[in-house]
Length: 448
Image 1 (cartoon, helix red, strand yellow):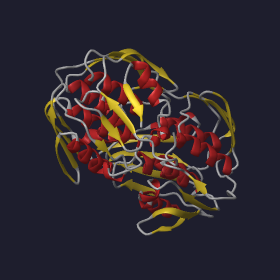
Image 2 (cartoon, helix red, strand yellow):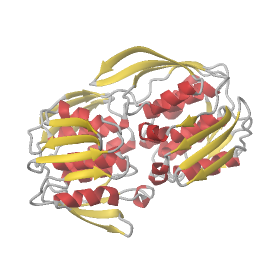
Image 3 (cartoon, one colour):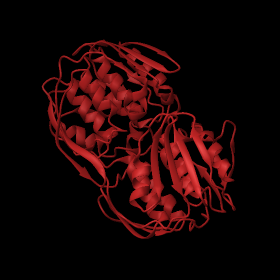
């Protein structure tokens, strides 16, 4: 499946118990960063467990365009021969990042402090997403950006010929913005300081340190103060990518709401900046065991044993938890629809500028399936109908958004009537084995 192809309608029907093991793909955030930092190191970086979804494949293609040698050796096994910090070559053609918001923003950061001119584009969904949140801080280094109205793609970025270090406070919680600034700082002399008022996923900090960058994080009254010394020689690494907690969310949530289910999801990242969904599900009464906790590739992981949970209750999700689960709110709203009582999700404004306006997309689809929903600019409230209480029977628009598509297919597995999504093709951007994996657990999902 590809988000660029002909739409593929998909329908999920009420299923029997989901059972077995669900080995979800590698973490998308870490996969992007491994390719980019591998390209900025000197020597060969070896990667195992790389997510081979279209978003990450587009980043691999981009790194080749910038002069790195990127090779696939087998499923999830890749190598990157890097060109060093400041060693990127100017691409000969436009960089098409497909649907990858993370990819395009991080790549912009990585090239913004090198004297070159690069034009970026993407699919219809990515071309609607604002890039100013990244290009504004990159301008502080001396880079210039020229795009469509509203700071949208296609966009040409002119890298700074004489970059300067910056001190920047991230205005909204965004790991993409923070990471873009840190990547730009690699080729700026002196110390760049990034201040986060609210912590976001810390994969960039972990991986930059692993590759040999001089980086420190200090917790202060104004937030986390991240200091990076520019112009390092990054050392190639062996990166073991843990399994993606955002992808694991779909079989986990499906098992919680499909009666009789009992599944194992092995090796899922439990990074504290990414596990907000799992903390919330436990608060709702979810039967999840975190087995065999360990560390892989510098990230904490665990095996998740998940059983059907008939007594799920609505909760209020604290706003300060939103950054650690921003991609999981769509599927959480599905679980909330199948719980007793009301679930209140505040501080979720960032959902409106993802691959789609996810608040609106989930609200309209849930309403079509018979669930009462309230929303404002920064809030989504779902009034649950309890186990087996969601009528379903609707066709939901996914707006080229992979997480909206998978969320409504999960809902269909527990609804009284089937739920259809108008296009399942975007799922390939992050979870190319979704259909096969869910079918292996016993889920009733079909195309057409």
